Amino acid sequence: MKKVQTHKTYGLVTAIAMIVVGLILHVANLSFKPWAQWVIYIPFLIGLILNAQAFAKANDHFVTFGQVWSSGFKAVAIITIISVAWSLLFVNIFPDMMEKGMDMARQKMEAGGNMSDEQIEQALTMTKKFFIPFMIGRLVFGYMFFGAILSLIAAAIPTKKGEAFPQDPQV
Image 1 (cartoon, rainbow, N blue to C red):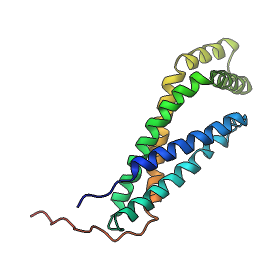
Image 2 (cartoon, rainbow, N blue to C red):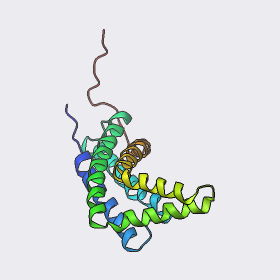
Image 3 (cartoon, rainbow, N blue to C red):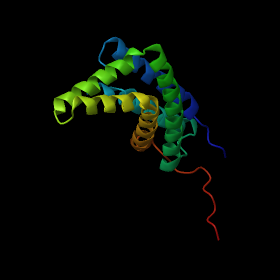
């Protein structure tokens, strides 16, 4: 019996919700606040929980923990792909984001007091040069890592009856 899949729909809807929350934070000029980076994980977790519940319900709860987690992690992959694409677009739509990030990095380096002006300029030049690859890497690693953990949490929530037709043990 083939399982009914829900990860595509919930991955797409969750990614859109995360993008909207990110836009709200940007418009409200809150996106560089230390706590704001964690706010995005609220719709992430909610979307994964809704996916887990929908996956279990669509399969009459004849699912295992691993199957529910797998559905959640597939949704995480979709969320990550959409988020990377949006972030690349976002940086082009709002080029001020990179400048604000550079200004914040400069302030942190100057506040540290252990770097000369020349060292700060070199560090900022390298940061600007590799901004896009670092952004993509941070998104992919962060979303996949935290997504795996959030999928574990989400997979624990729905009621599970186990396999409808358990596979015969291998002889």
